[in-house]
Image (cartoon, rainbow, N blue to C red; front, side):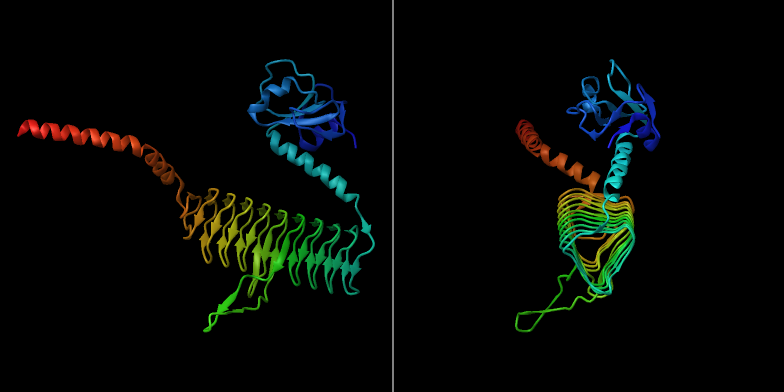
Length: 348
């Protein structure tokens, strides 16, 4: 597919500097792009490539100063990174919209309801009373269990497994290998030292515009629902336990683990490899630094924490700075002790 600078500028509401008729058919990194490709510049560290790149079109921010001649056509926007993301999204939509129909072989239960313009890839399984809404894309080897609802324009990438009774909203993207609705980790200790499984009879509810990364696992509720609210973005390799709630527009980086019944607020940012124990409340706007271990609720909004156990981010940085200075402080203390001893001897 070929797009002219004029067409691209229309999509991202940009202003053209240069030839509006030049066209591109693919994307490239600004330091590697060739003729016929589109690139963008958002990080000042890459500014030098603006003047050397072979890209035909470059998206730049309004604030970007031009210090040398640029061969490419420029499209100025308020935020180059956001505009590039918008453009990629449109490009991806065009590609996925072309996928329709049902490949063979697949298993479709007789009671399953399939909407219009749906794509179902080979070896998919669609269970009893499942609902696949208009425009949904079900890629090969996906399992959709009994009584599952998959919302409009939702994409389930290869190998996704959606267990029974789970609800997936509109415009959701679930990447390859993710498992939604497996049993929560519930076992009752017995007098003889063994553990008895507690049946997990709830489900998972994923609201609209959520994205879930590859090989992440979201367990069903013991009773009730594990809830991922609208706009949340979850990275690869996450573990979300039973009855967890993740708020609107919260983001969680890879390899984090959230224990059962913890409630995460709206607009929370959680770094990679964070561990959160169960039954906590994480306030709206909280920021949890990578590899932190959260063992207590965060009750104040917009709080930043780090460390294990996690505590106030600014205080933690001060403590780290003091710790680095301990050898020098020890040396100075010994010098002071020596001076005090010498003065004491003179006084005596």
